[in-house]
Length: 528
Image (tube, rainbow, N blue to C red; front, side):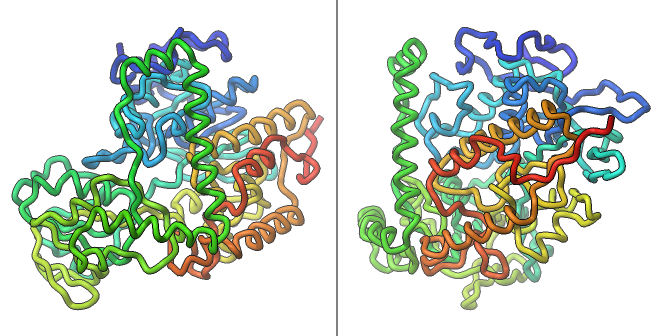
């Protein structure tokens, strides 16, 4: 039965696991509707406020409670939890990390149907987690953050939201990396006569049957949706600015017998998760040195030769950079789909639109009825940064515009006391983003507990360790394939600085985040 924010049972024991099998999903999961309880006229205070109710925001809620922090709220602008897995509903939408890794460590799901599950199943899992851990009383859905500003006088964060003002001692920003779709600014795109939509805002009212459809981009989302819509459309044009390395995805249906084994002998699922994690760690290790990553090029070319028989098409689909310089894509069906008779690859960027004609950089034209933008997400200028104003009065967007996106251990910044970024700058590697966020949350919960136990009003990373850490990050990235693979990627900002990837091992990341290093922070004692 669906659980709403108003009829959920209040939490009694934060560490309890109410269900014998908390990870199992035997229904579509609770659809948690908007909290319609009016806020009191006076501003509401919570010790901790989390911004965003996607995977990392839900993980934050559970970890806070398990850390003994129960006075917290989770704000979500939508009327449903799920984040990117709520918003992305395009055909074929699925994880590109094995499901056992792409799941909460505290809520393993023994009943994943596949090794790489689709969006509906993952969204159901997220909603079931909210139900299992009784998080609904902490959720404030339909509540958008408009601005978060640190008040030095009050030593608190003041949050202006779409439903009034809130204050908090600590704020965890869990708005996610894949949140704001990029819509390219192309001449004539506004005048295209047919439907135009981003993959992250899929228009399910548009029937693609027999239509001439143009997909712009060949990134993670595009290579999933292209094989799904190819059999349906009349003609499919794929605009490819840069070819991408595509490797097979080790996907398979998990037999019922294996699900039962995982459920009744949890160690076996932990073992399988460990194996998946080891594979990803090995891949991340290879990417740490460009010269080592180049050894994978023959593997990528062999995959292309097996899946794309036409040598001319294969040449256009072959990247001219080292594997790993851009994100490695996983698919068993994308390359075969590109060989179908109704598919035409346009190996150039789309630069303009004239009526229903799409014009590529080389002048090639294609007439389409529908345009699907697979143009990715805004990483360099995340909208949330414009809404965070620090102790010095500057927005985070202003700071990052001058200094490039940086953070201490991907989490904290000078002039932002008691503020924590989940999946901040220089944390991405070949691993589950959720696992990385959970490592950060261990650090964040330790910080909040340390401040509470020591009677501190504020914690702020000092400029010296902040600068030292970020300089070390850039030195570490200098020899990686991300910086030396011969491509231009979203990992690099306008200045050519890598602000996305982590240069070292997963082991080091977890070690760095295992303990809150208060010695590197300026502290403000509470007023007596």
